[in-house]
Length: 155
Image (cartoon, rainbow, N blue to C red; front, top):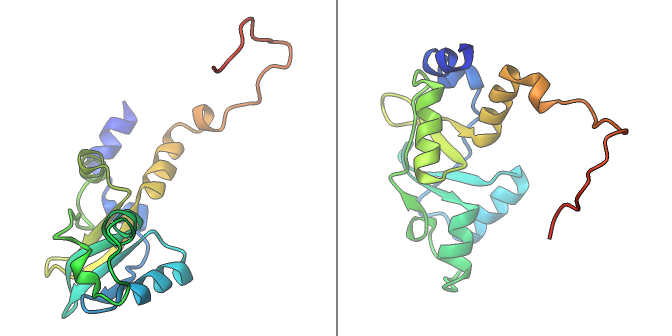
């Protein structure tokens, strides 16, 4: 099957990860959340001296900030996910999917050999890639108006 081979051969760089949005580890949580809102992103990479040390996501905001009522003036390093799972630009798309699935991640930082962020790979990019391989399945035709279900759907 072509998809199976392509998942092994095509690299993460083919998916054109978005530019990394990053903050320093000492940045106040309130500033990070405002930056996320301005950029309309679901995660921010946390760096120290340009090296990736963590990731702060919407999930972190809900579970580590709002639920325990952590002051928004606290530094983001206290509530980030440290040492996030990453991929490199030349890793296969299959590797990225496996890492996303194993941790239920929606975003993976893309790093270079020196552990500096070069992008963020989102699940949205993976879905678009899969749509390229199954366009007729994903972009299916509208249902046949002559076909009527015989039983109710739903609860």
